[in-house]
Image (cartoon, rainbow, N blue to C red; front, side, top):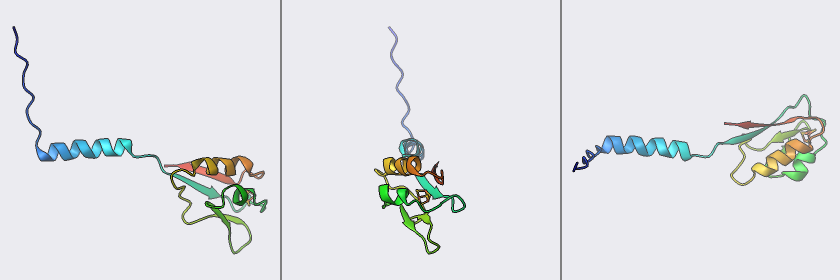
Length: 95
Ligand code: F3S
């Protein structure tokens, strides 16, 4: 009969490394929206379907709010805005 070998205990450094790797794997991807100002013709559909993500800028065309980061739970609105822009000016960037 063989006796199973005991696994050596991990050092605290090894534990932290393993925890960091699993945390980075579990982190959700960040999405960003971007409006191409050269294409935007101010149909304002993006603002209508996702006012949390888009606004009119001082030049009268649509632009992304903040830095374009899509908050968790609003990814569907970003896709809706992209699908509804007749000028194909809305881009979604996955990071
Ligand atoms: Fe411009 Fe398209 Fe929105 S044309 S205002 S980005 S729906």
